[in-house]
Image 1 (cartoon, rainbow, N blue to C red):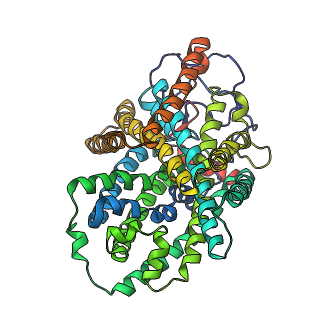
Image 2 (image 1 turned 45 degrees about the vertical axis):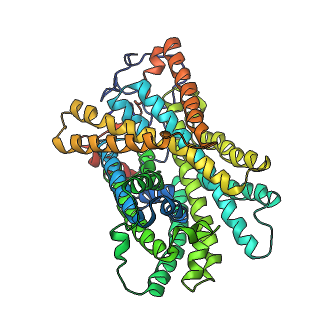
Image 3 (image 1 turned 30 degrees about the horizontal axis):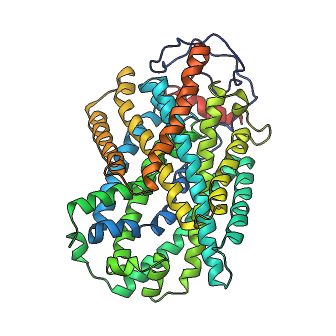
Length: 512
């Protein structure tokens, strides 16, 4: 098996000899493996293919995304299903690009490790640092979403669950057990996350069936013809719809822990995108049937509850609030899971302080990284709520800022694919065509989030993300000046696919 650095190695703790300090791509092999030790490993080869899929599904959070599908309808009107069809195509193009790396290399650093193999270390650090930002803030947004929807459930019971005295403690109530589950083990956390997500999707399924039964088995030709919708509206709706897919790539952070990473991770990524894409398209068709007009939607403060009443299943509103709450908790857990593994990988590579690269002696989880990030996840919505921001606005604001981290990472990893494959002498026309299309599509999505300039406070969000990236990049460039050997370790903590890889993995499983 070829490794850039043996992933069982102990985290580096200071200056040392290393590969060239240049900013070129991370080479396929290092200068020789350091003798492996058992300290600070993650739970190698412990996660099944279903659990890998569960990580991607939960981080995507389809139930909570369906809850906000109405936003796309307000933009695209009866062309909403076409916005979701196009968004699915865009997401699959990016997913295919990421799968080119996942089939050939496995790492806890996921996309930043992939970028380092194709674009160079400084670019990879900027993209990876931005993706960690995205994961952390998405976890914070989902935490806020859990408190918001559970608060709405409490309101139905006659309590003021959406008020500040309820929202603040609810944030802590949902965060503490989430962190505890993540510390206990990756298999527990992924199983819990996917179970919660599946439970929540049952409620959405019941709602969609009720809508189709209520409106009869008929074809709404107006939706397929996008009656009354403009090409611009559908395109802008696509931009918003793409954000419903972010998180699908998070299973790539389980490269160390997955049993068959070069098979299970690409499959999880692509299957998640296809399954969620079909779900969104069907849900969009059903919800547009239920809303009837944008005016009726605009007057509804709880679109899913409005739809359940329209379909004659008003009792389902209670379950829907709980379902979205459950989905939000699962998404928060999966996003924090991925963020912690990115920070862990940077710690193991000695880019961040080595303590971040430590793992729990019993559970083999990146507990230091989890404990470091969890307070940030909780503090963001807590502070905003304490200062009077409404729960719905917290969810909208934080989710929007987080999305920049994902989109920039998707753009960079798509650009990196041809360079990576060319160096491995595996470049063929299809990946080139797909990655060019993926780059153009994500580039357009990013452009439309910036131009025309959105109204305040959304116009400040790109600068918040940019400030984060600049601060991180300044840290990395300073590290390159102080200690080039340490900086050159970025992206080296990975296993590259070779002919004997699967037999070696099978041997590890047999020994365990």
